[in-house]
View: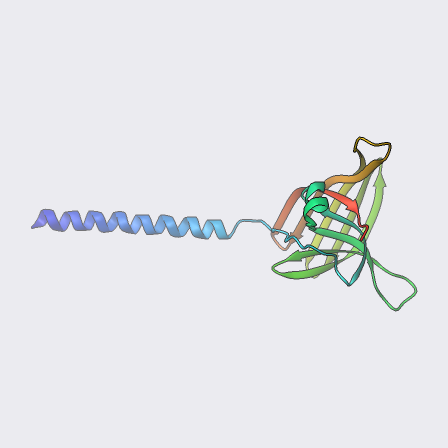
Length: 162
């Protein structure tokens, strides 16, 4: 009888330890410092978009995937402010250009809005397509942050021709 009770206590302790470990894994997994930008498949109507970025040039050209859009905001004023649009949690987030500077062949741009910050660094590259014409594209990195959450990734972009 005591042996059965001891086995039940041992099994309940193991079960408790198992559930405690699972809870820890779930909580730790949910609290990681990561933002996942969402792909969209068309440019925003709020932006006169001149450049788009995604994971790869191929993602843009062949699949119309867009992670970051750059351009100017449509306004009734004479000036049109430079901006970027990203998508997070199903919503478009408009970010205002804070700074843009050329550092050698790298363009460094900083955007901010609604608690989000975007730092985009990229350079122009040529893609030899086997003809006398060369397609240019952009190659770089970006960092997006919102509070303590952030994402850093490699991006490639093209001029928006739509």
